[in-house]
Image (cartoon, rainbow, N blue to C red; front, side, top):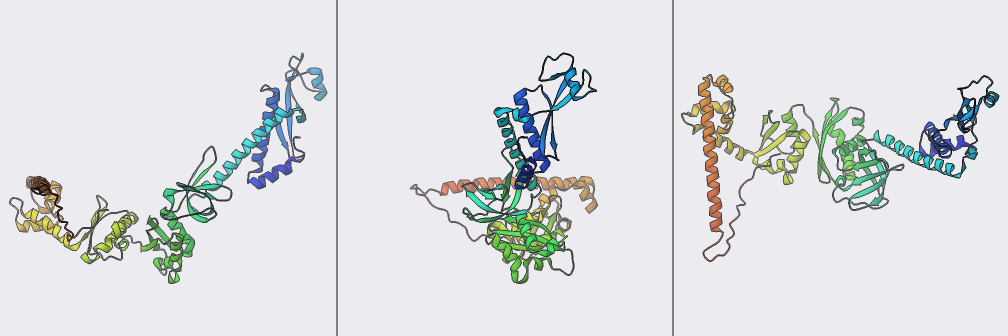
Length: 455
């Protein structure tokens, strides 16, 4: 055939390229079919078979048995046909083995092009199939090329891309450096599979702990969730499935060796290991550690929590530029609003005073409203009449009067606030220039305590 020892060559290519033997055989069959069609046209009826005994590809051409031959390339006379098969009749189709050495240079070149194309496609498919199942794993590679927006990483049988947005800030690489990353995505494209890596994804942090902590792989400790601001700080929530194992201690390791290994891989990123709790409030308190928590007010409807901390712990709970509370919110999945005790108590007193100021509102009644969770006129204005009827044993008409009075007080309050703001803006504009037209910089009040950010 085209190659004397085809079976040996196919087996060699199969081993080197990692392509299935049968896929290569089909590729050669298609290439040979293309060569035959190139020489004899598309009308020719052929069948290609691979012989395992001889290790060759055999081409059989089928011709119709006719009385009078008009197209010798596609027909065979009855007399000649009976030399091949004595029992053949007019209308039968006889197959004869073709001599492929007669195909010529153009046909051979066509076959070569098809083989190259099919081999490349087969290689791309093998790479895609190998990596699509490894999505979500950590992989090691060598930096092959560094550009402004991405790093090309050699994974051995394929190349991967580490985009700038998936790199840890201030992290630098040079050609030949080893890099460890998380397989984020695998795209199948015409020019080959594109493998996207990440070093900033929370799953990268989770997988690093899985590789360092045997108890996690054994199922004794489970990582519930992770949140990161890559290169700066990360939090993971863990829980033990065995009462004899401390999940936090298992992740920290002896003298902190396990967590330090992870920290070194992440270029010094600080890691907080948080014990998970089935009670959302306790879980949030753990996530905000080391800050002490005075009380937590849960709003199930909006999936939010108001967290009150002692004034001394306000800055700790919030963290630098709000980082601690922001990561705690991502980790727990709750919208968190952190407040200091002083400001929280002031807001409660202000809300209570707004209730007392309502028409026909006695202090004792305001206390009862307060006890039922209506802490201000805003809460009362949003109440449902049916709830007030059930809580205070009043008529629906009276309940609506309370709600309408609270709503009217809210409108008045907003109008006063808007008017005050307008007056202050006008005063600021007037005080900007003195009579001579010189600028005066208003003094900045730096002594006012600020509440934590709403996350």
